[in-house]
Length: 85
Ligand SMILES: [Zn+2]
Ligand SMILES: [Zn+2]
Image (tube, rainbow, N blue to C red; front, side, top):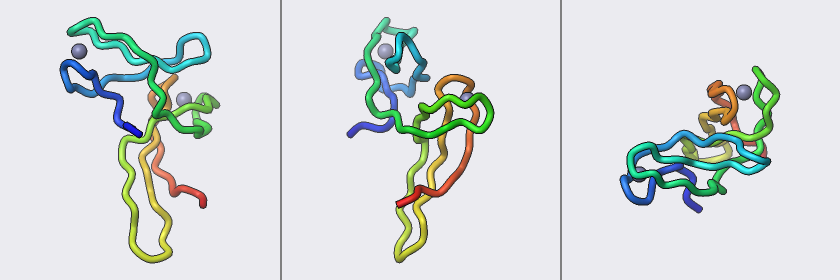
């Protein structure tokens, strides 16, 4: 699954936003607008929003937790946390 929210036409990273219980991405350059399905459930510690995008996801070797940078789609708050398995 494509995790990074990018415009299929311009190949630039877009900023997802909530709209009617779905998450959409909108490109201001070419006008592309579509649903973004790569979001993950992550509760924002700042605003309580339960949807976020993962900007960075690195798998570590061995039994260490993978870490990712979650960016809240509502307020844009970043938090770096390990994924629970
Ligand atoms: Zn575009
Ligand atoms: Zn938030």
